[in-house]
Image (cartoon, rainbow, N blue to C red; front, side):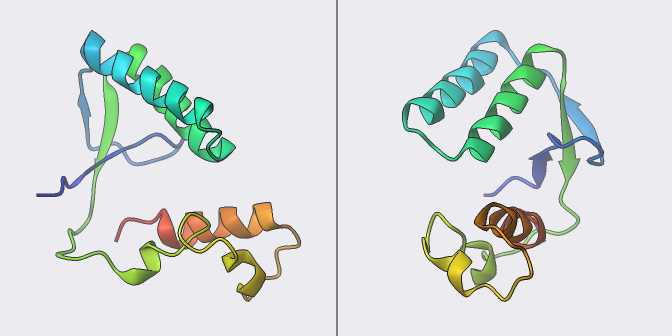
Amino acid sequence: AASPWLIAWRPGNRVDSTVHMSKPMQLAFQYATNLLECLRSFSCDIDMFRTVADMSKSGPLPLSQASCQQSHMPLCHLVDQHTCRGVAHVLNSDDPTFTLRFKNMFERCTGVNP
């Protein structure tokens, strides 16, 4: 079953609870960050994992609870630059750069947990 908990990694995220991260879990976050760097993942994904890895070392990891939990994943949460590489070309957006279009898409659609 999917967890209703989300890591509150962005400044200003609501924090409903915290979880202590053991040393092995802290290392797992660091290894995940290193793996994304080796695979040359998107810099925003690397930055997100690095932030979480750093947060896990500095104390309890903040969590927010999803306001509701879906029984299925809405299709709009699956469409982004990872699944449809040319999606930025067809977005109806006033954003002048692909970077801004991807950021806007993530923050308003795929990165939003309903």
